[in-house]
Length: 131
Image 1 (cartoon, rainbow, N blue to C red):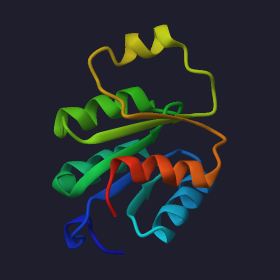
Image 2 (image 1 turned 30 degrees about the horizontal axis):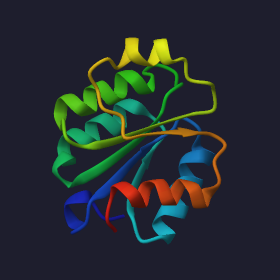
Image 3 (image 1 turned 45 degrees about the vertical axis):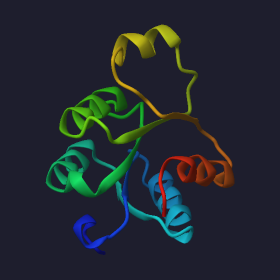
Image 4 (image 1 turned 45 degrees about the horizontal axis):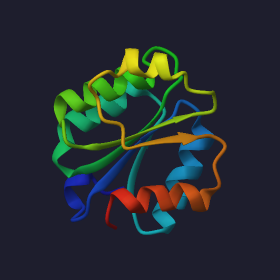
């Protein structure tokens, strides 16, 4: 696997604690020509992002995960690279009040409701990043 620094395009960091989802979304995006680095553990993803942040154009994170939730993860990502685009994914209904409480000053570019058609997922990504 290439490191993000070997990619001449904007890389995508994908985080979901469910391996099957991470693997499926990663494969679909790679089939469309995107460079994707998938993770199931937030701390590993965060460490990787810290070392390679300049190469990332998009971070996609699930919201509900053990240990670190997606809100906490995205806050840390934005502390490192404030202008990176971010998507949040969830299989649950998002409470607007909860969202504003957790991320009051953080711009989220897309909220992905799971399940999602893979075509809709890749279309959302394509709107925000060039492959």
